[in-house]
Length: 434
Image 1 (cartoon, rainbow, N blue to C red):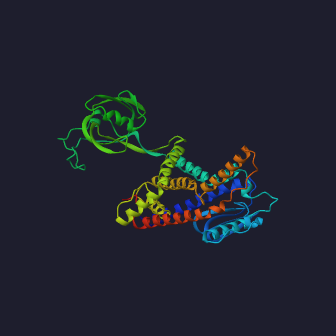
Image 2: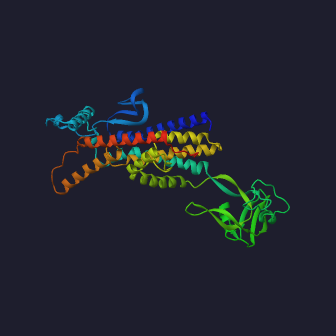
Image 3: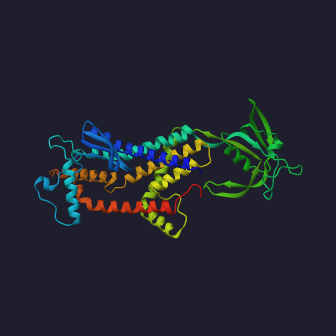
């Protein structure tokens, strides 16, 4: 691999991740402004501010650590009891954290008569705002996969013949050995199939891919087959009899085994074949299901990753990885010896997968993640609906600052898991190159 190409791959992933984060926060910002919430800041990254500029009431900027982002909305939670003259929370570490969270929230509250606080919105509007970020990541993944499948295309063995074996060599022969007069001619050569021929049908069955033709041939050893090819603009009918040979065959489960099948001795031209416009979104949804399965088992997966790192065992290639691991994979994809379109497709696929991960991860129903805010809004709605059903006064808005201790534990857990993944990606990384 070349160092420059590796660095370029890492840099492209960082830029792509920054764009993904920016769009995620834009998914929160646009509906928030649409519903009248006062948004004080829209920031990409954390830490010291590198650049910012104010447009209207919102400050837009970039911070030093590009590992996330946020928007600052007025009144995420209702005013604290102390703000309403009800006294402060009691002593203790977590009680102090709750009071600090309430004080920070009180500083963002818009004037009482403006009704521009987040907590004052109806339940469905709060849910829309909080889901806007993850949904934006999902939509970006749809677009990226659509570019891969429908724009670039999938490398597929086409019906155009690339080469025809002159003879048949046994498994014990040197594959680079030249054919001799003693070697039997391949069935394809005997039938007169030539490089450049385009397969039209095999045994009366029209074929659109080389895989379809191969399936018929492999299932028909020692059986004469009519093969119709297009050559120089005209169709020709040829007779070919596949011979019985041992070849590696990939099953429906993806496993490659050795089996006795029909063999004629020809290879196909590989080209990028564009798929339907729905192929990209379908791939994104399939991967969403896979990532959801990983997220559901995340603590166990992290534990296994840590154990593999300590014992030196090879990691699960389908397991979780940190941004460091994703950057390494991006560098490998960019520097591998392959056509440029393959590398572009690989980088886009990696970025699309990261957006799928962001979508699923942010839906976890725990604060401070978006899914946690959705649960708070829904619980508020349930309480109001219950009170209305039984003719009771409307309850006070749910005070999510009481969940700060739980949020603290979740944040610590996320930091620990992130640290384990980063360390594993340095010490025992997942590699495309083996």
